[in-house]
Image 1 (cartoon, rainbow, N blue to C red):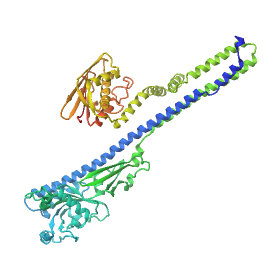
Image 2 (image 1 turned 180 degrees about the vertical axis):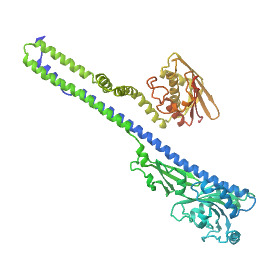
Image 3 (image 1 turned 30 degrees about the vertical axis):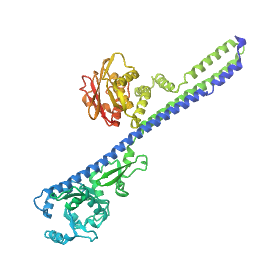
Image 4 (image 1 turned 90 degrees about the vertical axis):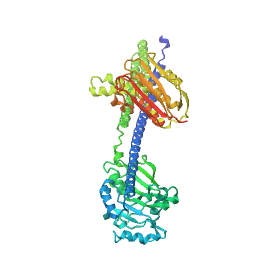
Length: 584
């Protein structure tokens, strides 16, 4: 009614709707929080991925050094076997021929030579020197020391590069002598602490590698018996820089390593200017200690500039800039609406001034404006829906001017938005797997499968049979694995109905569970691919899923010290076999 019309109230409402309301600020702030959260988690994922990559390269370097040292040990043990099986006593000529046939320097890159050190009692020194001088007239034992026994280098090949070491007594210096005595007493290969080789002119850290050999006719059960029956050691001198050069590839090295023996640095990969450590590498560092034939070698790994340069943040930047673009579109729409309301207010003022007598028309205009304000505010209450709707509005409003590529990009953005929540949940579960700690206990397999079926809401067209057995393990870990395997069998079934058999077996050491379905199967060439993150055999638009199920299951089994294997010919179903150690 006209008597109920309050022009002052209507004007206040118009003024209110022409300003940015609290709900609008909530939408703006929430959209920015969502954008920066997505950018943060994307950045974090990239950093974690490259941390794993860095650790893999570091482990490869440590493994290469360990394998190379084992190879050297085999070479020295081969020398021991040669001496022990030789029907005559070793002479310099025999040792030279053996090394020529072995081609030691080229067959074992990084080794400086291969020699024999004999144990000589102090009372037998002169006789020993005279026996060696028969073939090496210039042979002498040096330097003098106060020990009661001698350990002179008697043979060494190639002699051309090691002649200065011939006759050097290992007992004159503590690192050489202690490692030698330890090899003798333990009857095991040993390396010395850091030393400088006398035959190498540069001051560069090196070490000696000993493998002892004994009189086979004498007992060697106790330390005293070993000391009494020791004949000598086959040894090899090493320059650490040459060893690492022969071990590591010099092209495109992505990780630098420093190696310490106790607190003494024996190799610094950063000394090569081609592989300088990046100043931005503080977050990517790793240290590991490896027991290396009686010594503790500490490996310190850092990424090179080339590694840091290979880290790409394009994905996270696209998320950031794309999100900011959408945020500003939201701001533009909100302020466009408020600006339209301001214009409507001015228009209402003009109409009110011009048509005071036409109250009925003015009331209709005011109601239209109120309805417009209500609709505009209501459509912007949910930030996430506003972002999704905004993409739809852009697609619809710009369908005649956007190129086809842009339309496809908007379509892809809508699909990715729908998948974001599922993907983040799976990623969060995957990153927590390393910290999955749950006490082992008895679990009834049948009860566990029933709980999983209830949780997944299994369709009635699927039947599941399971062995009624008790297993021993981590309930949370086993539940995660079986839930993902059952979910995959149902999700990827080609006819939408089927049968899943779950069988359990035990042996002395392992518990094994087999999940067998009658689905389409997985072709053998894809068995490894499907266990990787984000991998599906069908397009994401055909099968909704993050591609993380088998990756999560495989990761859990690795953490349990077990395994996950796939048996399928890609035609008659799939059998997934999980196995983990039986520990109580």
